Structures are given as structure tokens and as C-alpha cells.
Length: 127
Image (cartoon, rainbow, N blue to C red; front, top):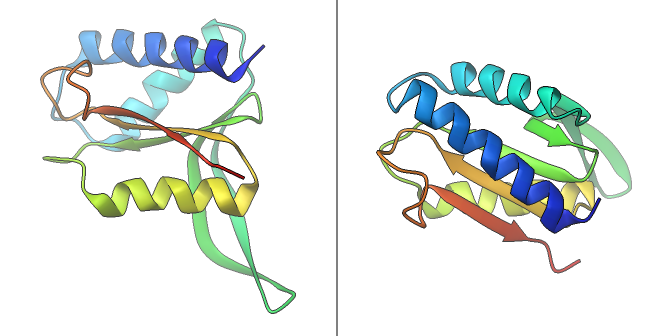
């Protein structure tokens, strides 16, 4: 399955969750519901995946965690905030670089619509 195929399925599941639950809930609620929807699509899903950082050839466990990793390929970072900030975008890009993954989705469920272009953002690591 290509990154585009995975992205399409993840976005569809996110829209389904958002339509059912609406905005204003905790990130953990959206995470649980999205994981459920993705597993219904028979996708491999891991959540709260620890990410080590390597500095000066030393592996350090510093508390980075991916919200969701789909098919060991796509990182999904869930937010439930008033608006997406630059720091959220940078967070996903950092996760992509630390894990050598190519594609991340940043989803803000605390919006009236996920189709407005700023609530669901596709981020590509230029490896």
C-alpha cells in the first residue's frame, strides 16, 4: 500500500471520527476512536510509541511519543487545540526525522471542519 493510499484511509477514518464526536473533546478520546476506526480497516496501528533521540552517538530516552503509527509508515499526531501553531508542525517534522519516516498527518479535532485546510495537514519528510 502506498503512502497516498494510507493517507487516504487515515483521513477518511479521521473524518468519520470527527463527524461522530464533533469538536471539544480530549485528544485521548479522539486517539482511541481513530485507532478503533483504523483497526476496522485492518490496518496495523500502534499508539503512544516511544521515540529515542540519538545525540553524540548516545541513545537517549527523552519522552518523545508518537500518538499513532499506522502500518509502521505514517505518523499521526492528534491535537484538540484552538488552532494549529507552528510548533505543532515542527513537532511532527521532528518525529519524522527521528524515526526516518516519510509521511505524517497533523490532525486538529477541535475545529468545526477537518476540510478547512488547517485542521488536517499532511507533512512530508524530505529525507
